[in-house]
Length: 308
Length: 253
Image (cartoon, rainbow over all chains, first blue to last red; front, side, top):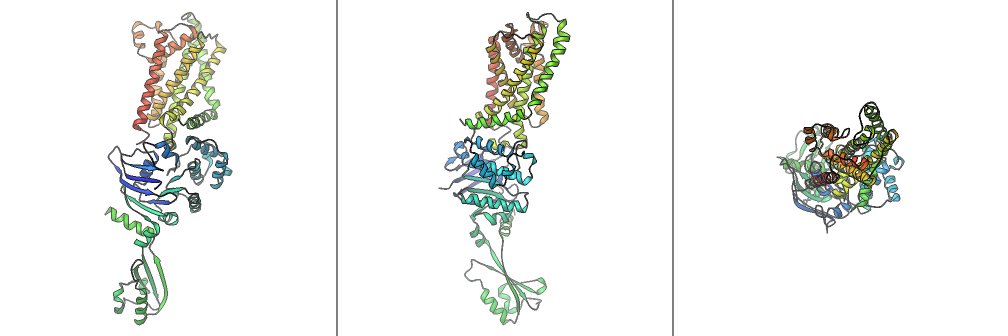
């Protein structure tokens, strides 16, 4: 059974705006799911409706088998939420803020756990500092520490790396990897493709309140990913030689490079034949390079199709 | 019931109170002292006894009520408005708590602070005048119920308010006049008949009258009516809060 089951989940705001148009999705225990989508696609609304910040207007969802509306106590007990905006009581001390969240979840004090969370997030030295004195990156860590304070089984990270520097982003990915090792299911939203590419097991793409696809990241890239073979020539050519016309080559870099696109899923890539024909045509090769299309290109393709 | 959560909210709110402990206490103590100097001594010496007590002593219950009501309102409205304003309300909404627990935590803390300040003012007042308390238990009951009901009312204002101006609006525009016209500084019987009639539509009259009865045994309206009025007000606020959370008004789209 999936730890999060979402069935035809809908949210129409009072003004009539349909933020979620019937999303259905299963999230397996222990996986990292990245939800990709442009701003306003419905990523945050989906998370908010699952966590209780927004009332869904249709469909249903369960977390750990508990309905998020009718059995919200049991459902929310399993969930940690790291919001997109930095929302913290600026006058609290770091450790107090983390203890407060644990208390809200009805759990008894556990200073050992709080210490280990703060240490893992490099916040231990700042435990008695007031939040207002922390940098933006540190505040984001406090949000994560709060979300982990009640040992959630499912962690929602809403754009965890929006506006953070490269170093912190790497740290964040390490934290996520460590949580995954501990068996925590992680759902993160992002519009940084490289983030999904770097840490997700599966990728879902949302746009206009609809889930366009959910797929294993590797499968997605393999299925949709075409590869390019870039052939650098010793002597530039002005056009593709007639003998090579069947390969649909493109001339680039002022004739120094020929670009061959092929499908990795195809029965034959045609590379062997191409190389043989290149030699027959008397072209001398200086270099060969292959390039896989990134998730970003796939994503732009998908979202672009959705809008036009 | 998630009592841990109620306690967490309560402690969090009280920490805020104790962080600004001096400000929280000094201003009510100073303003009360000023009231005594002006009303009690300067003017009071020219006013004959009211209901058998000196004017300075007569205004003590009203003064306590005035502070307790405004403190309850501002504590509770600010307490819940602030998380809304800062965005930290996400944490309350996504925690396994129900609205009763949230209200208990916030309103409990706001009422505790107001009660504390009320008692401090009572202590300050007893430095100036000879304060007698005829019915101590009834006095405490009225004080606690007032703290509670006005904190509930403040909680509603805090949820309703969309900005800091609105947060101040109701206390300034509605509550302060009602308190001043509620017999804090005079007995309703001192008013012309028409104003006496109008006064009976002012809910604060019942609170102050009942509270003063617990001190001096004299009241403008029967004590039972006072008690019913404050209980009714408390229940009304509770019902409104129930409705707010049921519909998610202003906090949960």
